[in-house]
Length: 164
Image (cartoon, rainbow, N blue to C red; front, side):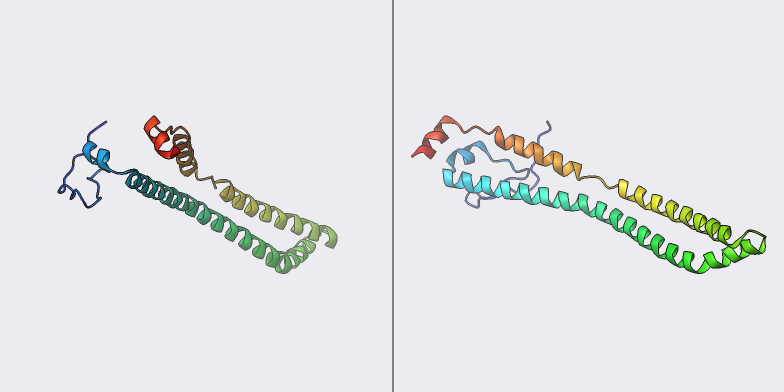
């Protein structure tokens, strides 16, 4: 691993601030009380949870945009299908009737054509919905965090301090 180079001034010893990169000098960590260590761990855990939530929001936002686009396509397809069937089917059926097809068959042919168009528009909308994926990076990161927290074992000195 590459070492993190500190470019700013060293933090004041009593400030509680950490050097750049989040590392603590060994002598500072040894001098911290159990309460300070627990407070630091709590802050780090809170920051980790906030970062996980932010990552989940960013990933879900993209899928919501896709869902809105797919929903819009379905709504437009339904509206156009309705008006097209109402207004143009009668005109087309009478146009086929003028070509010599009986009225009943002319209306059936026109209806079948409009159903085919509506089916194609529905397939376009379904393709948009299939592109929606779960937030994989968030899931993987959360699993790694849970695994790391489960594998934490306190040192013997910490067990006796807690047991009192």
